[in-house]
Length: 152
Image 1 (cartoon, one colour):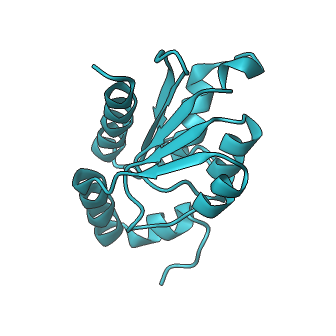
Image 2: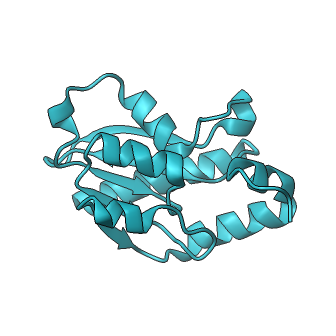
């Protein structure tokens, strides 16, 4: 299995888990330059009544305290375009690449990532998009709260 498969499959597994738990179905996985899965997680804002536990933040938390060098060649896989907070975390830790499952539902800080020299790859994965469409249709108030906007 390639590094790409490991990272994206882990992130998608996490998104499915979040959906199963009734939370926002976004997952993330961090893979080192050597192809080692460093951490994975999913959005836990609803489940943990958290203000900040987006998928990428959950992933970083689950990876634990790592030396700065661990992030340098790493790839963050995320099932949805990362919000400003999660974009900032990727920039802060200087990950090399962010692979996004889809960005039709929401476009986050992709241009900012690129401006910081981080490679951005968008897969436009149908399952990622379907999970988000279903969640937004069923729980619009939770979705808009998650992205810091008023319900539309």
